[in-house]
Amino acid sequence: MAVIAQYDGSLGWSEGIGVSVAVMRIRMGSYDVCCPMMSAWDLHKAWPEAELIVVPGHSANEPGIAAELVAAPENILKGVS
Image (cartoon, rainbow, N blue to C red; front, side):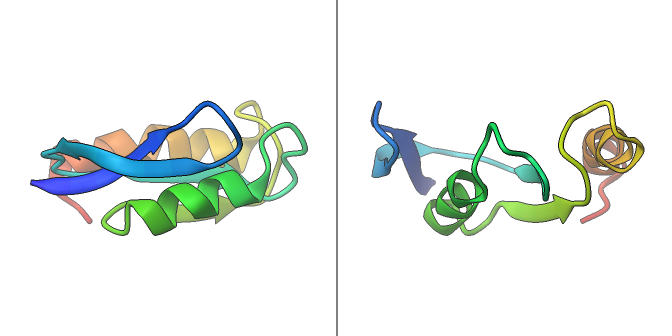
């Protein structure tokens, strides 16, 4: 069982919930102004087993981000890390 972060309602994360997780992928647009990069980084630091990929772009409608959002679960199903 891994101890992961729990969103504490502010801009930070707090440890304390135990959850068994097989795979976690974090995708972050490098030009995203609505969701700060620090949020993705903080989540990754609190959940080190998670894979963090920063993709050029700012929204899920951008080709690179859309491709990563489709590829991540497909790779999980295929067993690709």
